[in-house]
Length: 148
Picture 1 (cartoon, rainbow, N blue to C red):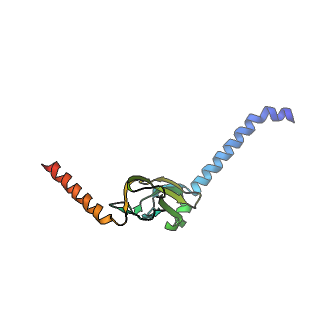
Picture 2 (cartoon, rainbow, N blue to C red):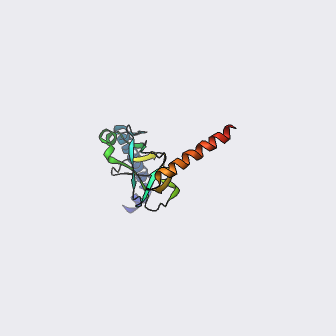
Picture 3 (cartoon, rainbow, N blue to C red):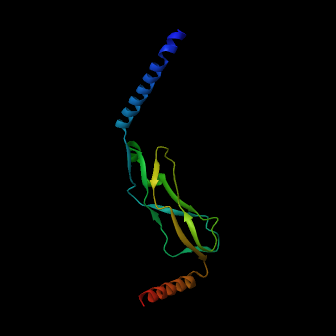
């Protein structure tokens, strides 16, 4: 019995690998994986902003997310299953780099791409109007100098 197993071990192993490959192919045909942009924009949740600071200027409020998931998962996928957020707990006043994070409770979903990094200006909540006015004036001056 042991000698027969030694002689046929390679054949048994190849048979197992072939059967596993056929099973994976059959499951893939039945429920193919699809990669596409989620049809709705996902609201970005800005978390843990320190007291006394506010975000100013143009910053994204929504994100387009490209996902990869089996067709059966796409059929039941809702916007409440997806989450895009930025943790702002370590951010201080001034212009800073922010990285967005993606999370889902669905195990079969793989996120492929979304705009995940950008710069945000954090300012004290009291002086928000003054800084915005200063920035607007500064940008107008820069545009004037570039035209001259």
